[in-house]
Amino acid sequence: MDDKAVERGPLPPGQHAIATFPRFGATRFAQRFPPDPSTLRLAVSSGGVPVADVGPDAWSALPRRRQVSDFHCVTTWTRRGCVWEGVGFADFAAALGLAGGDPARLVVLHASDGYHAALPLGDLLADDVLLADRLDGAALPLAHGAPLRLVAPAHYGYKSVKHLAALTFDVDSEAHRAPGPRFMIHPRGRVALEERGQGFPGWFLRYAYRPLIAPTAARFARALARYQSPD
Image 1: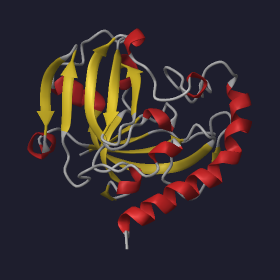
Image 2: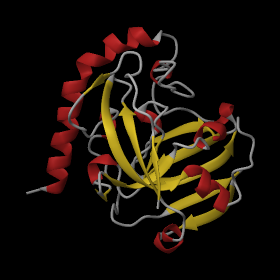
Image 3: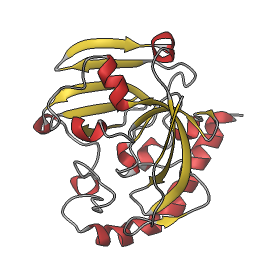
Image 4: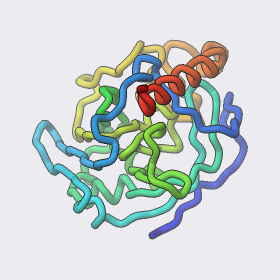
């Protein structure tokens, strides 16, 4: 297994480090969970044509790597030094013959809980983008996207889709509608440029988001506890 460490420098603009790693996201997804978090299956299509249905056997044959990188939530918290394991997105795309597409075209990432996000293919082919199935030395937990998630450290966490179930390559930017208000979703969401959303400067959204961190984390934690202990 290859190891890759992303250099740990100063925190990006507007971010602050926290010791925990909360389950987090848009609140309407707090009570949504994948139907089978123990079985990895990833449907891949391009230009509307099915390419592959990747299951556990095909997944286990792909080259793996370990990566240490920070996770940056758009609401301004950062969990430093996450140890992810999985398959590099570029390696995965190359194995399916999809790495040579137009880098400006979108790849839409679909979660089994109904969430979706998109990034240009060129961004996803970066060396530090990973399809992760392990976190901090253990199988990826339900709270953080089991059985499979994207990890794109240069982008805010809302691009790193959890419970990943399907990838759609070769999508025109005009054809993809983001799953939320326009001001909350940036087409690329690059952390270094503070691309938190659209229509407002990134520094302004820091102050809008920060009061939401504690109640959102609590809501997601309660929903997970109820799901895991329904009685």
